Amino acid sequence: MRLESKGPALFVQERVGTYGESFDILKFRTMTEGSEKGDVVVTKGDARVTRVGKFLRATSLDELPQLINILKGDMSLVGPRPTLRYQVDQYDATQRRRLDVPPGVTGWAQIHGRNSLPWPQRIELDVWYADHWSFWLDLEILVKTVPVVLGAEEVYGDRANFDMFDQSGRVSEG
Image 1: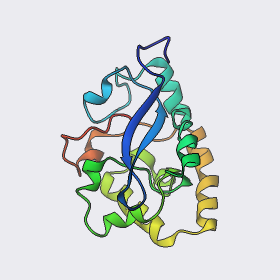
Image 2 (image 1 turned 60 degrees about the horizontal axis):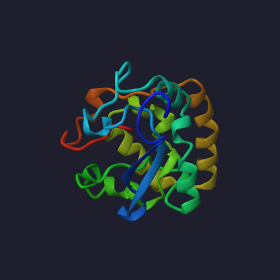
Image 3 (image 1 turned 180 degrees about the horizontal axis):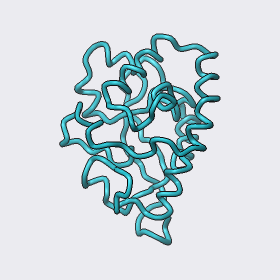
């Protein structure tokens, strides 16, 4: 990454975790430096995604540094994907239930459509997960994640899927 684009190899961004507590999520940077200040949606063919970034996103290897977040106790392997504060600030009481479980690297929404799902549907799936959490459900999600990642399915979002949130926030690295 550093050979192809100036800036750090890691992307660090504040996200919201369990019970609304903030933490810094770690990812390998997949976009040119400063891209997080631009458009909020990263779509297929986005010129801001570097060549190395395309590979990292397609293989989900950009998520690998989140193992550090797991070791620190900020995240789990399985759970709702952690989101940005401006998004959480717009949740209603039902949607806030997704914060009752630790955020994860993969989750129920990821195996049911990943970035192709509109935000309201992702959140609904995350709330369902929080309400039905079990060891066996986590195991099922981990097993079903493998073909999703290997197939590089739904890696990029669709602009229409971000309509739930005020577009003044920044989502860039997904």
